[in-house]
Image (cartoon, rainbow, N blue to C red; front, side, top):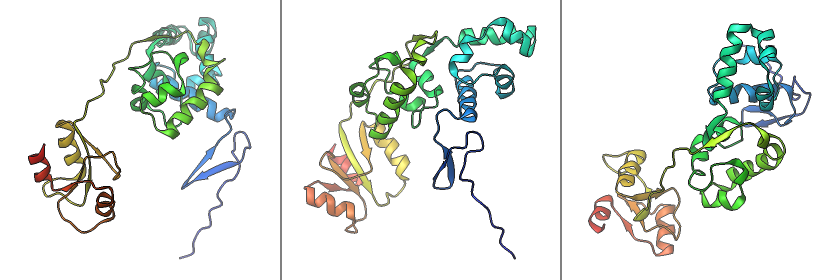
Length: 250
């Protein structure tokens, strides 16, 4: 069977920028790319639950930025989609002007920042204007997520999105748990998958991590095989215990 040769595109068909290949995906990194901007508006409308603002309506209205949504007038919308639909859409846009920080950030298409990550900021701030590197560290955001968020803050929010007519309401704050112990799991544990065991330990206020380091209290290992994690734990002088021994100790 003759193999078909596929030519991988190197140039963005929208803005002619050079595409970046990450594993099996191609990305346009030009923040001014027209198609990318339209997709950002579509994503924003979807996550902010602005009903009636799908891709076809976005194209009819000529929206290319989040700001454009809030600059719309009733006359403009009526001309594009008709009087009846226009009044409904304008009401939906008005509703979106009241939201929480985590919903807003997740809607802004910020690399690595979804609503789960954004929720970590809620105990510390409720408005994007208060974002800082220090706040991100306090909230426990990882290095890459922090860098991405702060880049968006400096390049897109300040001087641009900060003027959106949005009132930020208090979101549902998740109170951080106070763990009694931190453990790492290696090997198989009879009767459990790693995720089900981690969940049971979580219920007992025991935090699980993926790497052995000086900050953990125990390495859980039910079948000693002198693995790299066991060797590391021995080097650090950490107790290596079975699950049963752990429950006895705590």
